[in-house]
Amino acid sequence: MRIEVEPENKEWTKERCKVVLLEKVQLDFESEMRLANVKLASMQQARIVEMIERTKIMDVLFMKHGCRLADLLYAQKNWDLDNDPDVLAAKNANQAKKQDFKQKAKSEAIDKMRGALKVTPEQQAEIDELIAAQGPVNVAPNSEGTLDKTEFMKLFQVICTLQVRN
Image 1: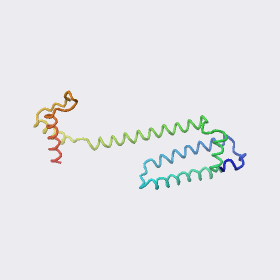
Image 2: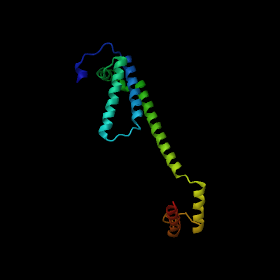
Image 3: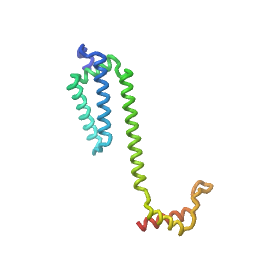
Protein backbone atom coordinates (compact mmCIF):
# COMPACT_ATOMS: atom_id res chain seq x y z
CA MET A 1 0.00 0.00 0.00
CA ARG A 2 2.84 2.39 0.83
CA ILE A 3 4.17 2.01 -2.69
CA GLU A 4 0.87 3.29 -4.15
CA VAL A 5 0.48 6.19 -1.68
CA GLU A 6 3.99 7.62 -1.45
CA PRO A 7 5.11 9.97 -4.21
CA GLU A 8 7.76 8.80 -6.65
CA ASN A 9 11.31 9.64 -5.56
CA LYS A 10 12.76 11.53 -8.54
CA GLU A 11 16.40 11.01 -7.52
CA TRP A 12 16.10 7.29 -8.11
CA THR A 13 16.82 6.44 -11.71
CA LYS A 14 16.34 3.01 -13.23
CA GLU A 15 20.11 2.44 -13.41
CA ARG A 16 20.70 3.53 -9.81
CA CYS A 17 17.93 1.24 -8.58
CA LYS A 18 19.29 -1.60 -10.70
CA VAL A 19 22.71 -1.23 -9.04
CA VAL A 20 21.08 -1.33 -5.59
CA LEU A 21 18.94 -4.33 -6.56
CA LEU A 22 21.98 -6.22 -7.87
CA GLU A 23 23.76 -5.53 -4.60
CA LYS A 24 20.69 -6.72 -2.67
CA VAL A 25 20.60 -9.94 -4.71
CA GLN A 26 24.27 -10.54 -3.90
CA LEU A 27 23.83 -9.74 -0.19
CA ASP A 28 20.81 -12.07 -0.03
CA PHE A 29 22.88 -14.86 -1.59
CA GLU A 30 25.81 -14.32 0.79
CA SER A 31 23.45 -14.32 3.75
CA GLU A 32 21.83 -17.54 2.58
CA MET A 33 25.24 -19.21 2.18
CA ARG A 34 26.30 -18.09 5.67
CA LEU A 35 23.15 -19.59 7.15
CA ALA A 36 23.23 -22.79 5.08
CA ASN A 37 25.20 -24.80 7.64
CA VAL A 38 23.75 -23.21 10.77
CA LYS A 39 21.79 -25.66 12.89
CA LEU A 40 19.05 -24.04 14.95
CA ALA A 41 16.83 -25.52 17.63
CA SER A 42 13.47 -24.69 16.05
CA MET A 43 11.76 -23.28 12.99
CA GLN A 44 10.84 -20.20 15.01
CA GLN A 45 14.49 -19.57 15.83
CA ALA A 46 15.40 -20.05 12.15
CA ARG A 47 12.79 -17.48 11.10
CA ILE A 48 14.06 -15.00 13.68
CA VAL A 49 17.64 -15.37 12.44
CA GLU A 50 16.45 -15.00 8.84
CA MET A 51 14.57 -11.79 9.68
CA ILE A 52 17.63 -10.40 11.46
CA GLU A 53 19.72 -11.09 8.34
CA ARG A 54 17.13 -9.41 6.11
CA THR A 55 17.12 -6.38 8.40
CA LYS A 56 20.91 -6.21 8.22
CA ILE A 57 20.73 -6.21 4.42
CA MET A 58 18.13 -3.43 4.41
CA ASP A 59 20.29 -1.44 6.83
CA VAL A 60 23.38 -1.87 4.63
CA LEU A 61 21.48 -0.71 1.56
CA PHE A 62 20.09 2.31 3.42
CA MET A 63 23.45 3.31 4.92
CA LYS A 64 25.33 2.86 1.64
CA HIS A 65 22.79 4.13 -0.89
CA GLY A 66 20.11 5.90 1.16
CA CYS A 67 17.64 3.43 -0.30
CA ARG A 68 14.60 2.36 1.71
CA LEU A 69 12.99 -0.95 0.99
CA ALA A 70 9.85 0.88 -0.19
CA ASP A 71 11.95 2.77 -2.77
CA LEU A 72 13.49 -0.45 -4.03
CA LEU A 73 10.14 -2.23 -4.23
CA TYR A 74 8.66 0.73 -6.12
CA ALA A 75 11.56 0.65 -8.58
CA GLN A 76 11.21 -3.10 -9.08
CA LYS A 77 7.53 -2.70 -9.86
CA ASN A 78 7.79 0.55 -11.84
CA TRP A 79 10.69 -0.50 -14.10
CA ASP A 80 10.10 -4.28 -13.99
CA LEU A 81 13.64 -4.80 -12.70
CA ASP A 82 12.98 -8.44 -11.79
CA ASN A 83 12.94 -9.20 -15.52
CA ASP A 84 16.04 -7.13 -16.31
CA PRO A 85 18.69 -9.31 -18.04
CA ASP A 86 21.45 -8.28 -15.58
CA VAL A 87 19.27 -9.04 -12.54
CA LEU A 88 18.17 -12.37 -14.01
CA ALA A 89 21.80 -13.24 -14.80
CA ALA A 90 22.85 -12.46 -11.22
CA LYS A 91 20.01 -14.56 -9.79
CA ASN A 92 20.82 -17.46 -12.13
CA ALA A 93 24.52 -17.29 -11.25
CA ASN A 94 23.66 -17.38 -7.55
CA GLN A 95 21.34 -20.34 -8.14
CA ALA A 96 24.15 -22.21 -9.92
CA LYS A 97 26.52 -21.45 -7.01
CA LYS A 98 23.91 -22.80 -4.57
CA GLN A 99 23.62 -26.00 -6.57
CA ASP A 100 27.43 -26.36 -6.62
CA PHE A 101 27.51 -25.77 -2.86
CA LYS A 102 24.86 -28.44 -2.26
CA GLN A 103 26.65 -30.90 -4.56
CA LYS A 104 29.98 -30.26 -2.85
CA ALA A 105 28.40 -30.75 0.59
CA LYS A 106 26.85 -34.01 -0.58
CA SER A 107 30.18 -35.22 -2.03
CA GLU A 108 31.99 -34.33 1.21
CA ALA A 109 29.41 -36.26 3.24
CA ILE A 110 29.81 -39.30 0.99
CA ASP A 111 33.61 -39.08 1.22
CA LYS A 112 33.36 -38.85 5.00
CA MET A 113 31.16 -41.96 5.09
CA ARG A 114 33.56 -43.84 2.82
CA GLY A 115 36.46 -42.84 5.06
CA ALA A 116 34.60 -44.22 8.07
CA LEU A 117 33.98 -47.49 6.20
CA LYS A 118 37.57 -48.06 5.07
CA VAL A 119 39.07 -51.34 6.18
CA THR A 120 42.60 -51.56 7.54
CA PRO A 121 44.92 -54.27 6.14
CA GLU A 122 44.57 -56.18 9.41
CA GLN A 123 40.78 -56.07 9.19
CA GLN A 124 40.91 -57.16 5.54
CA ALA A 125 43.14 -60.11 6.49
CA GLU A 126 40.64 -61.11 9.19
CA ILE A 127 37.75 -60.88 6.71
CA ASP A 128 39.67 -62.93 4.13
CA GLU A 129 40.46 -65.56 6.79
CA LEU A 130 36.78 -65.87 7.80
CA ILE A 131 35.64 -66.12 4.19
CA ALA A 132 38.27 -68.78 3.48
CA ALA A 133 37.03 -70.75 6.52
CA GLN A 134 33.47 -70.65 5.12
CA GLY A 135 34.58 -71.75 1.70
CA PRO A 136 34.09 -69.83 -1.55
CA VAL A 137 31.01 -67.63 -1.61
CA ASN A 138 29.03 -67.34 -4.82
CA VAL A 139 27.58 -63.82 -4.79
CA ALA A 140 25.88 -64.16 -8.17
CA PRO A 141 22.12 -63.75 -7.78
CA ASN A 142 19.82 -66.67 -8.51
CA SER A 143 16.87 -66.57 -10.93
CA GLU A 144 14.83 -64.54 -8.41
CA GLY A 145 17.56 -61.90 -8.19
CA THR A 146 18.58 -62.82 -4.65
CA LEU A 147 21.45 -64.74 -3.08
CA ASP A 148 21.07 -68.45 -2.63
CA LYS A 149 20.12 -69.24 0.99
CA THR A 150 23.33 -71.21 1.58
CA GLU A 151 25.50 -68.39 0.24
CA PHE A 152 23.54 -65.84 2.26
CA MET A 153 24.08 -67.86 5.44
CA LYS A 154 27.86 -67.98 4.77
CA LEU A 155 28.00 -64.21 4.43
CA PHE A 156 25.72 -63.71 7.42
CA GLN A 157 27.95 -65.93 9.59
CA VAL A 158 31.05 -63.92 8.54
CA ILE A 159 29.31 -60.63 9.37
CA CYS A 160 28.08 -61.92 12.74
CA THR A 161 31.54 -63.24 13.63
CA LEU A 162 33.10 -59.86 12.81
CA GLN A 163 30.47 -58.03 14.88
CA VAL A 164 31.10 -60.26 17.89
CA ARG A 165 34.90 -59.82 17.63
CA ASN A 166 34.65 -56.05 17.45
